[in-house]
Length: 40
Image (cartoon, rainbow, N blue to C red; front, side, top):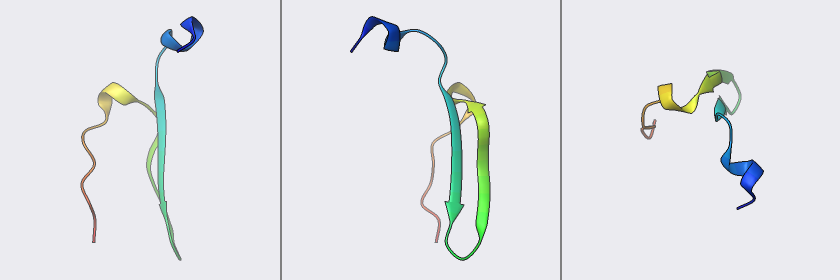
């Protein structure tokens, strides 16, 4: 891993889509996101 890649914060955006669109996370720090569960 390049040294520059080890620095900084991780921001996550998560979207679900099929025939509809659902935004789960929009630029949220990864530390604030819990484990994802499988949805049915």
